[in-house]
Image (cartoon, rainbow, N blue to C red; front, side, top):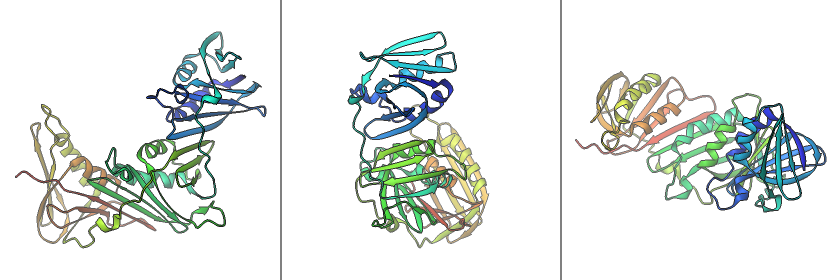
Length: 383
């Protein structure tokens, strides 16, 4: 096999591929990139850690077709430090790889392509097309509430429900919940005999990688296909696929309280600024002590925000529109900040009932054809 790549292009193409390279495995093959040079002049690069995978076709001059596996981390390190415009990769019959650029040459061992794990056969008969920027925006509202190593596996990701008229995303762990819905006409890529109504759970690691890949461009589209076990995203020239979490998601609508006794409306930016100041105290760790909570006191048309720890104390006052009795309640400050930041609009509405029941956070003026709600459990106050 003999191929010549443009060095800058190859360096730019590799970072997304690295996210599907295994770093903790006894299988050398999944620590590598599968390089397939074809007679038609195309070159396909694939990485796959048996949970998620990346596949990309790159431009190259193919002088001799073939395929092999090369350690991805070492290959990327080599091409980054080489000085020149073109990278020549040649692999002989003994699987000895030679990487040349300018006057520099590096040799390393390769593995046979047959050692690479078999890629899942994903049938593309259930799918849809969505704007990358819209998908990214919706994920950014829910990804903070995903579970991470939760004992309930279904919570370690984002639940997606899509049909011809609406897309709904939900994330939830033991302390917080985020729901974002959008009334939208999606382009249906499903087979004619398939009902356009899917429900699936995307793992947290897949969501985190997907957020890095999605663009903010209004015209950039993502094509999404799913099966019972896998999901595949086609983004421009990159194909990203992953296993799904198997299981039935929780009945999230049932756990959201709809009839709270207290309602408070306030400026979102002012609230975030006050919580950021409180974070200087609540996020501090002194002599291994746990992080402290932030206390909210709803008193008439005033919201008093305070926190104290071994590092010091902080106090703020905000003007609010308040309906219902006064109340003192406490939260994990990081969780509260993440939920308020994810909420849309200039003003937010906090709905709550008692110091021990969950709070709902919603925009006062929801975006057109959108609905979102963020739920957070309080913490018990010592005093």
